[in-house]
Image (cartoon, rainbow, N blue to C red; front, side, top):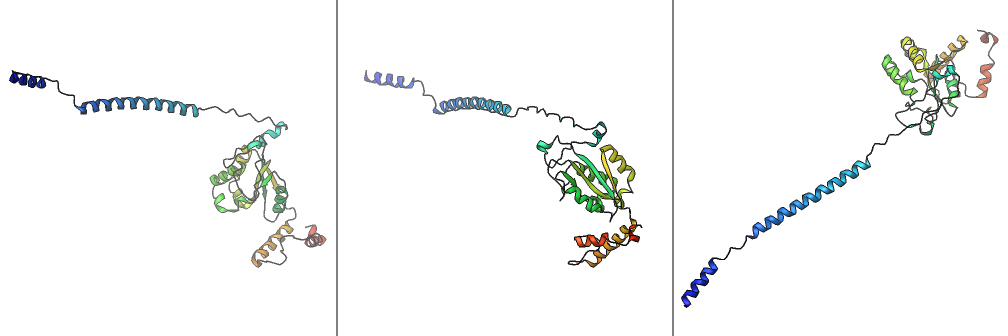
Length: 249
């Protein structure tokens, strides 16, 4: 009887269902965690994309048109509203700007005249821009330089604030102007540039000034009296008290 009991218990232990492997359970838990993680990540990505789209909405900006200036009809082609690339005109964007060019010859008083213009707060005359040969080498470089000046992108000692009312330059006839006069006249007519012709009536005085300027250049005076420029009231008096024969030449 004892032997039968032993054999029965052995059979009972043998017929027990085997325990589940812990590796399988771990795999199930890992798969479930991965699914939950993917779901949570997808929700977060959707929320982030929604916020980024809301933050970068393209809102059109309506710029207010500048009011019509109170000028005569014939002046309209000579009034402009340039938009510089190097800075913003800000509240002066609607201030009209006029373009001009001083055409002259050396020793004709153009430097003195330009100094008077630049004494005004909102007038910029940028000097002899085309004295540099590279800028007048061909019509393309000339037009490119003029566009930069009249678009208020030319920076020089004469450049004023963003409320500039008139901008221009001084251009000598022997600085590429006569070589390309047809294209330059067409450019001036198209862009509405006002031309100021400045010539010295007394040609003899101009030639004397040219010779005096050559003397100053060769002598390189540092502390002497410059022959081609007037720097004191005494020199002005001497210049104005020349002989009558010189005045009528």
